[in-house]
Length: 116
Length: 111
Image (cartoon, rainbow over all chains, first blue to last red; front, side, top):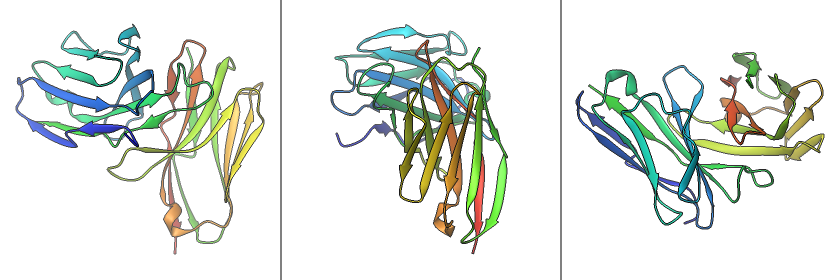
């Protein structure tokens, strides 16, 4: 696609439910990143994919968070048993090649998650 | 551990003025530095990308400089307009492939 597409754009869920957030990167971009932006906070790194593998999962805040990427394209971030502190905007970015040395990164518009 | 700091956290200037936003980083071993713009409720829009071997990049009224040895970058906005009002984020790509962001500068251009 022309840009990085994220869905849904907004998600309201009850505490304890599982949610799945989707990121569709720019076609041909091998590197994919997930970030979280909480209210009034900076961007927090979650996970980085190169192709289908995740060389860096160090940012995932707990074992309730997991992510996968299939076919070197679409990625899904799953949050199990959501908590109110998970409420944030989840942003996805992709890059033509790791680690974006020449081309920089393109971000999606994000998914705003609200846990009630 | 790489840390990125942006000063000031917020800035209000009258329309038409030139302004400078500052970004500093603690580890000079970076691949590149990128400036982004974020409008309320929206994603990030890339403004300028400076490779570690470069000193500056220009796009229209925007000019970004990079002094890697001192760990500093500036974003210069000429002849500011109300449409420039947004949060400006600085991000460095470290040698461990992570993108580390500053917390941003909230810019408000007064009509």
